[in-house]
Image (cartoon, rainbow, N blue to C red; front, top):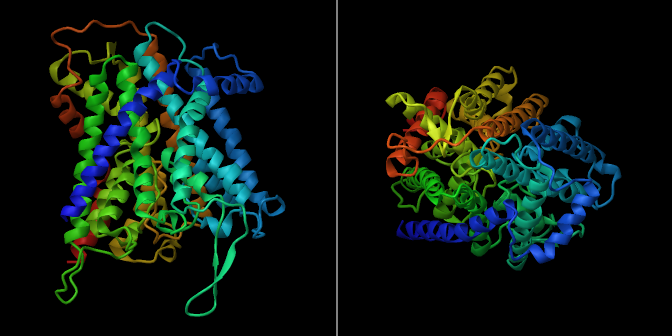
Length: 560
């Protein structure tokens, strides 16, 4: 157990140390300042604007910014949908895989465009190299870039005074992708290749097995997709077993590199936020709230897997190893599971269906909070900022003052947008779960009955309803109902809060600055961090405690 604690402490320390300079760099990039890559990438950036016909100094209001986000994503959805269905007649398909069914292709397109990366298929048996690289890998980049762009539009809403514009979406997307995501992905992909992660367009290989016979080893351009799937908090596995597959995550070093990349950009964006609003304490306060929630969850998940494993014939064990790779063990598996459900990542190096009931419940609850601890690239922080405004509003009501944050009064329109951001994910999660449970074929989709079977459905829709993408793995999701319903949920949960964040930014940007006074609530001290955490947990408990009682909590008591 001491080894596990030291591993977790090392991981957190390394995450903090790396996120600070990266956060400063991201802030400089997104605010148009010169960085060390500017001499190399500036000509490329200008060339991209020229090809797109974009004027980089042209500003957009909230409506135009939202239209650009939705239009770009809709076109991407259609392209990715069609690419999968036509892959059977397209090149770079050495295994001769046929086109994907229309409903699975729609679900996958919606999943990757929404940065969810929910997968109802195994990549090595379903998608060609072309679909994986031109389709999924490209959208791993740009969906993360869209999230970062919208976050900085919201940050400008806090910074600007009496302005009707928020910047230019195409410029924000280009900068986020070109200066941040691509360089980081190139470095990470090279490191992963050095560890044995496969990167090739060669056909699958048949190899002789020691016990006789042969086995087909799937190959492909995996490292390039794995790098951005982790950095962009996407999470979709190139192979069906995801990061539990040896060619996707072969060594302890590749494991820690991927673990770091899951939370690196979301954590760095807290630093970027503090720098952008010219008050680093605000970023530190949000960082602290996220980190506290993450550490408490990690400790509880680890202890559940370490000490609540079944005791067979009084044999002393090192915890519950069911569903886990020996190379990773309990400590690395629980750290990964906590990180991937705290971020809207969804990659796994162990099967969550095999976790103990209480550990599985905590992983579900991390997603159900709205993917804000640390959440997705950009989307996690603007989701957390919605909770910050909700906390400020509640505190203002308690003392009878007009709520303020960063010098802006928080008024009824702002709170309507906050409610859309905060309440859309739990509403659609619960509606999707209820609809699936009532389907006549629901029992046939499950590998378990009773409370654990319900937990499998609840986990699946918690994942899709919060842009995560991981699965309990006991729910047969490749059905017409789940593919269509899940796709609609993933799109609505992504773009309703995103549009609300942009319109919130537009409204904030038009306001005058309000001078701080003795009665202004401090939003950067320990008391506010505690209040923020309390509000987050209260909203999460009120939304999901009844469903959790029917699922993992009942599962725990039935297994005693």
